[in-house]
Length: 73
Image 1 (cartoon, one colour):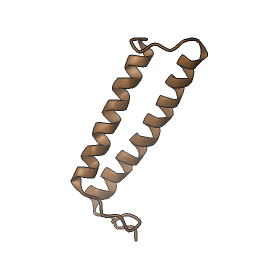
Image 2: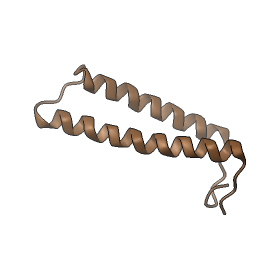
Image 3: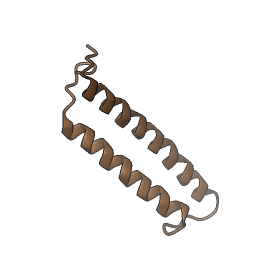
């Protein structure tokens, strides 16, 4: 339980799937298979990177808390 929220294995799996889908989207934007014109391309690429970092941190810390059995009330 983290901040009154019960962590289940499906939450960890969903976080992994979300992280993987963001990674695939980041690769497609970086290789310009999904095209944006001018400055918008780098803006989208940079924001996706920050989103991946945030989701990855939440996913990793949730997994560590779940498997170590730590409870944060």
